[in-house]
Image (cartoon, rainbow, N blue to C red; front, top):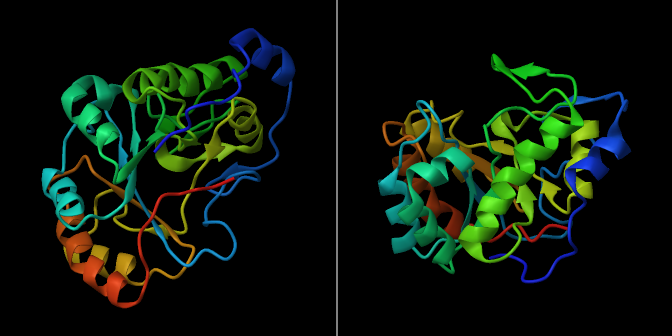
Length: 241
């Protein structure tokens, strides 16, 4: 699900001029302006799955995708530029499925920073110009894929600083974090995934991964879906503002 109309985002030169010299004050998963819960009053939850791309990240958890399709479960897939290049046919299939909405997971899958800060040993972008490229190269690829601007952005590692948040919002996207870590970067075994996902409460945004078939994500999510349904927690799209 994507927007059919949106204002034209500012260009790279405009972003560089507007944010040059800005010093970040906060860094992490919840920098001001980042969304980690659904809108107030929401009675559902959001399942979000990152497809990270690059060396070690270009896999496909087909079992997970098939489970979501079979159970008619809505979800948001955050696609990285390199993952799209590795799986163009599957990316088109996900984008064309009315159950799913597509988010922007960056171009190189790096933390979003204006000073080069690192997370999990991955060095982030180091200037407003690099932030722009990390967001907009993939945003343009996603527009070609979906036919419309993508609304949501999650950086690689989900870490970002407050200046980068402001840039993302100036570019017309909403930076999305999470309130439940569903699979620990695709490292949790299925019982742990099940426990995390099944513990969701209204308004939670769950992060997990759809690019690591060897993990416990697919089995854990499959086991949790009936529990969520029994609790009246219907997974839906993000629908953030």
